[in-house]
Amino acid sequence: MTIGTAASARTLGRKAGKLVVGNWKLHGSLAGNEALLGDLLASPVLSAPGVTAAVCVPFPYLAQCQVRLSGQVLGFGAQDVSAQVGGAYTGEVSAPMIAEFGAQFVIVGHSERRTYHGETDAGVAAKTVRVLDAGMTPIVCVGETLAEREAGETKAVVARQLDAVLAALTVAQAVRIVVAYEPVWAIGTGKTATSAEAQEVHAHLRSLLRAKGESVTDVAVLYGGSVKPDNAAELFSMADVDGGLIGGAALKAADFLAICEAGLPR
Image (cartoon, rainbow, N blue to C red; front, side, top):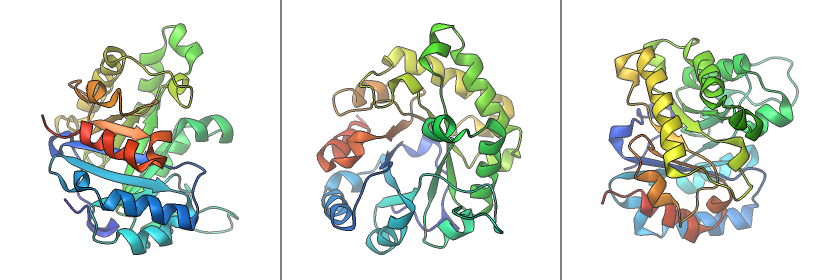
């Protein structure tokens, strides 16, 4: 179940089983990371067939993950990337730089990037292309705010966000992405979309992927919105929920492993 290096990253479709990705956000330390990764790697859960797991870490810890996770069953990646490949862009980190560490994944368009840094749909599309060009898998995030949900705009919002990305890709590129639906109102709030609500949006996203091309239909669509050990199994049981993008629970080995275990075939 080894995922491989960026240069050999395989397509992660829904037929490959559940995909569980931890987003550490602005957390971590060298010592704390070592303990967490050690606990994760010591568990037989990550070696079980039917689930693929990875963690997306702050840029400074990519080197630590390269050393600790090379050849292991736990993949890793970054939480953002520049839309630029190089040049006078102080503070930016390019996709080729990230790929040099052997990362397999990069999160693009997370709601916190859209909200706090003003990222646009076009910018997210550009970043997606950069990640693909560097041989990695972009995890493209889409999701609506509470106001948009209450206004009945959920499907229109996620369609606008995903279609902007798909329009920038060929079919051959589109089959290599992962999509994550993260209702903004359920991130870090303790609120979670019901399994039925998640399934409804995921089915809509699946239809948008299918419209791009039949081969794109099986792109993995993850749910990200306060996934916890006690709700993961129900969420993962939905027909179009192919795994999870995990926030706070990814910082605790026991919780993250329990969520991964919930994704194992029953």
